[in-house]
Amino acid sequence: MSKNRIISLAITWAFVLSSHSAGARSRAACGLYQIISGTYSECCGFGGDFRFSLPNERQGFVRLTAEPQSDLVAMTFLGSDAQTVFSVAPCPPGDPINFILDYGFVFSISIVFHVDPGPPPYAVYWNYSVTNSTDGLRINGMLGTAQQSCVDVPTQFSHTDLGRFWCKDRSLESRSHRRTARYSSSKAKQAQQM
Image 1 (cartoon, rainbow, N blue to C red):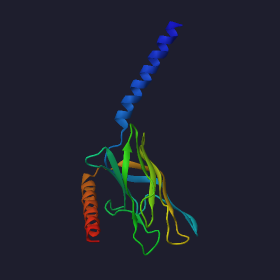
Image 2: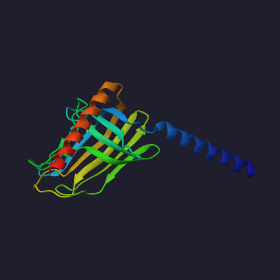
Image 3: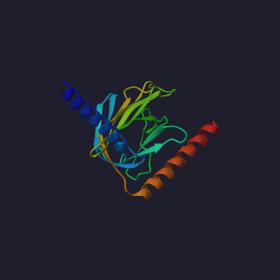
Image 4: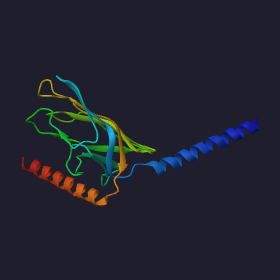
């Protein structure tokens, strides 16, 4: 009985120690990731579901960025040029919704992005998960609008089984970061002028 208990305890400790070190090794790093597979869909308008295979011209990369002064991560979907921020305009000619997702909570082998509906006009919300797998990152999630001012337009935008690999070209990463910083800066100036 005590021999079985010792073996059971040894196996349990080996599992705990190996899963802890595996989690430390497998945490997703901040940087630029290239989309290699997956599906993007727009749902719930008059025309039904629209599905698009990825990568495509409008979605070719994702950037994960650690937010300064917090333990949170931001995720930005970028075009095939690794610079243009992917966006949708659910109610033209209204402002587009940019796929810059803040408030990513970091766990041992995943990052979870969850935001409840925000202010009008769209009351945007999102729920995404980024997990590390043996073949790179996997991203699944949905961004939606709780309010709409147009009839029969998509209100849910989702990514399914996006596979991503680390982008080795650091020049792409720095160019993309500078462009998004300029974009964010110009949006901040516009908000101050209002």
